[in-house]
Image (cartoon, one colour):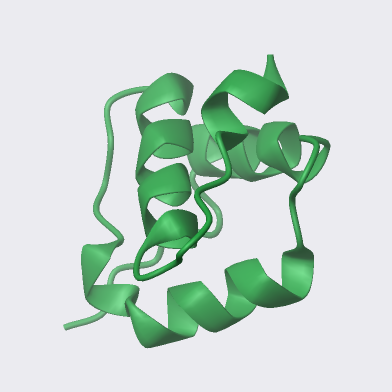
Length: 72
């Protein structure tokens, strides 16, 4: 069963926030979400979504990008 987070307000706000972060690559994020879709879970807050997205973005990467930190 696939969940749909794409229209959840906090998910949308989180994606918007990290898309402005230094080091963010939209094409890479799309690739990582497709590869690790099972890690997308409903979260309680925008900050929780940001942390989840950062974890997915950095999964199996040699160089980690601190998206949550850079987004602030």
